[in-house]
Amino acid sequence: MSKTFTSDPGILKRHIRPHIERPASIRSTNARAMSPSSEDDMLSLPPSFDGRQLRKLRLEAGFTQQQIADAVCLSRETVVAIENNKQSAIDGLKWKTVRNWCLVCKGKVRYETMNTFTKYLVGQVTKK
Image (cartoon, rainbow, N blue to C red; front, side, top):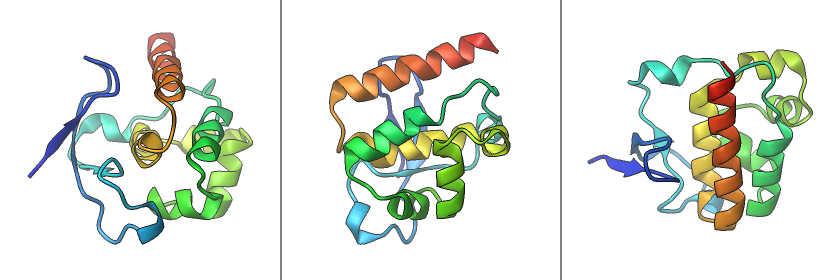
């Protein structure tokens, strides 16, 4: 059974399914992995993407780098590189990963934080 995630009406609407083997420390009804069926999932982010925005989400949600890495299927070293804006990590970052990162953090961050991040993402899309 699929559900629809919408952080803002009409923005980032995607069908999702539960992630298999999510660590119990970050399991919640809001923490879901995205279905790999969408072509958009494999699109890269623009080089101007700021990984510090993802760090803000992670810190406010109270997750360690290892917990977020496990939840979005990355290594902790890759999370560190993304959060520190290492260009090679940003170049390899996919929309699917950012979306999953948001979904993991969504239930634990303030609405204003998620709304600000969503607006930032929309700005990145319009820069392309």
